[in-house]
Image 1: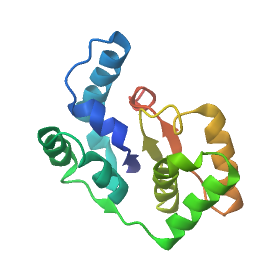
Image 2 (image 1 turned 120 degrees about the horizontal axis):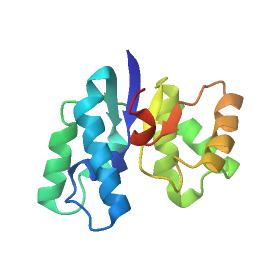
Image 3 (image 1 turned 180 degrees about the vertical axis):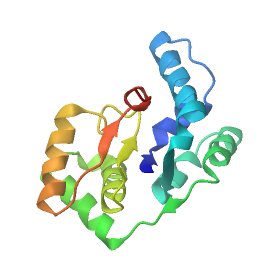
Image 4 (image 1 turned 180 degrees about the horizontal axis):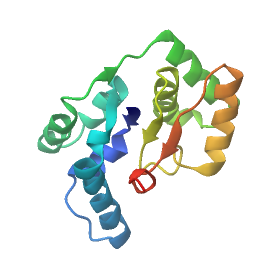
Length: 156
């Protein structure tokens, strides 16, 4: 079974109130569809970074986010992942202020995930950044997972 690292923005889209912005609302619906129709075909994981990020903000909303991911296995932050995240930041592929995004990639990579599922198109599901990060991962001896949005992982 293929593996998926579920990043924080996915969870936020999954549980948030429907947006009035049509594009965001469509992404929210795609996220819900993926969760209901496709999740069972993958082994899904989160990390301590995801837990930390979904637990902040409005207490009721944080509780809802935590409940959604509660049953999912949590990838541990290891020295290996920290070193890869630092290399990604040092390379300039991801800016220092987005260190958690580098952490998501590093954790998914060192744990040999097949996919990293996200709606973060600024630093994660961004073709130009993906190319640069993949070079760093390859230089360190890793194969980076496919970083994609739920739209890209809906199946055939």
